Amino acid sequence: MQEYSQRPSARLGIGIDFGTSNSAAAIYDGQELLLVKLAEPQSIMPSANYIDRQYVSAIGQKAISDYISGNRGRKVELSAELLGEARSGTGGGESAMGGPGESDTNKVYGQAFNDGSLPGRLFRGTKRLLGNTLIDRIAIFERSFRLVALITPILVGIRQALEAATGRGVDHACIGHPVNFEGSGSERNNIALERLGESYGHAGITQQSFCPEPTAATLSYLHNFPHSNNELVLTVDFGGGTLDFSVLRRSGSTFEVEATHGIALGGDRIDQTIFRQLVFPLLGKGERWTRVVDGAEVDTLFPFGEYEELLINWPISYMLNQNKYTAPVMQRMAQSDAAADKFKRLYDLIQQNYSYQIFEAIKAFKAELSVQESAVLDIPEIDIQVEVERWDFEAMISPLLFEFEQAISRILDKAGYQAGDIDLVLRTGGSSLIPAVKDILDNQFAGKVVEHDPFTSVAAGLAIADYYQYAEAELS
Image (cartoon, rainbow, N blue to C red; front, side):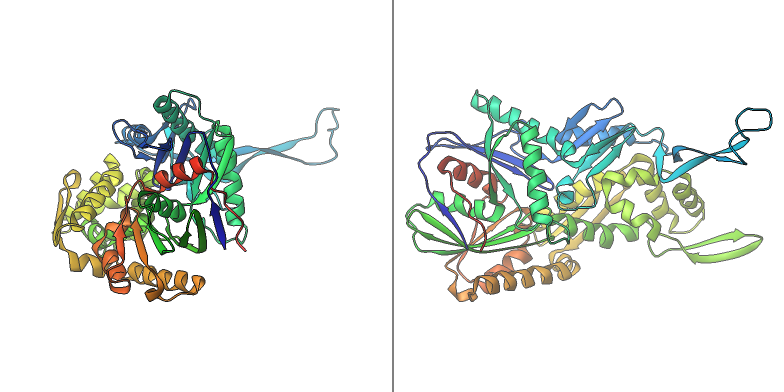
């Protein structure tokens, strides 16, 4: 059980929602709630950090733009990473002539590879790594950076935007976090929160309180409706990286969190599913490849599987622009058949590093399907236009929707309630706008579901929590 008790406060409430995909921040002074323009004129900023070879950092949309422009049309040439030299002597350390013994000098190579012309490294979704105990440092060119150092510049940018909005220094905030960080270790949540707190500290936010993201979303809603009392509220926060739940009961001025639950299911996985299902077949997946090997004609499926993971993870898709990937594509697109156009698309995608543009088109397509019965996936960069009915899209993501339904059952079981016991269901987060997600909730909680500020509810609730100094107790 968690309890949040209201305490009087004279200080300005600051809330920071550092998300897997995007970040937001809010200010509350006891009267007015203000969303900070992190990416003028927008309140939402991509959670991205780009570090160039001079170790100059750019954040937000500029980080993404710098990454795209730096890799467009760039040929990737990898070389093995030299770790050092090992000297092996032939005998007793000195030769008969009195000098050093004869030796062979062998270069020692690691399993990593250097991309000599790489202009910079892009880091997005770094929040996913916070609970991974196996990752503490990441090599960037000739230096090794701690994971917290990759997050800190984003948080510095957020703090600076807060200071510009308030006209004063900012050293405190209520910090949002998922119910469960991604990973599998039993200590991942504690480790992730320690790392997150350290990153905020380096960014100048030294006075910290923490609040689970779905709980913060609930607080922002209940703040808008202060007269509601003794309501049992289920909040569903379906964001870009995680799916989080809380069951909270309000009684007077006290909020009691009865259960929380979270899984690694978010909009990113839905976008990748769309890429696989709709775009891959138009890039050559499933096509055959005929060529001459050692004088004999060989006919096989094109090895598209070697390209898939790099295609659906756009921050590293530039790695496809290597001879080992482009040469087979060039050979296949030279064949005079109908599939050649598909491989020409794949070649253009690789050469111009269009994966990010594809995901942006997918997000727009997904948003249109949220309000229309059909939509067109339009990707002019590689000459793709595909019209899809909403029912076909829902069939496409049905395994993910099943995970969503299972997670609802799990939070109700943890709280010890049936669906009929819930008085109000708050639906927030960008992925909560998907009609199939709405339908699942409406079917289980008929007449009780309310949409609540899908992209900013968490930041608002964190600012309110910081103003009133809601104290987060330990789970028992």
